Length: 204
Image (cartoon, rainbow, N blue to C red; front, side):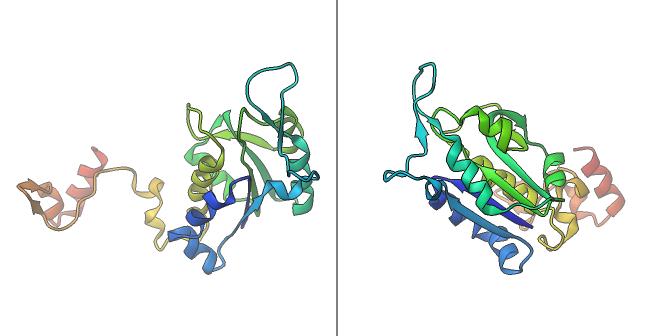
């Protein structure tokens, strides 16, 4: 899989995508993650990516032209998906992560300022996604969150398939020492009785 993240702040994204599991996934050729400076696709000397909104209002709106030129230059294939990070988009879920992991290529368009020209959502993006019912200063964090969640589902990225949350569910985890400052690990986990341990976990 290849993931492209289009932003005016690539320096925010690259340290995260090049580290830890995402970094290892790239080194092992399981995924390629590229960040792109949106200003590269501007045509004026100031590399302008925003302008005043029609109809008036506070702040600036990101222009459609740089996004359009960026997507054309990436030459996307059939199994590609273009996602606009948007506070008003559908809330991203675990099911979305699994769905998006089946594509060959994902492109995240990161908004800033007061938003993005609506024609980007209408004509360039395949969908708008949000990571929660709140507003961020930009779409970079959302793109990183979704990238992280998707890449985990690429075969071979995680050492064990059991590391995927849907396999073992969500339950409290403990490790050594079994007693710390009088705080004890539940005795059932020390029993060696796997049936009882499984029942305990299902009850959490």
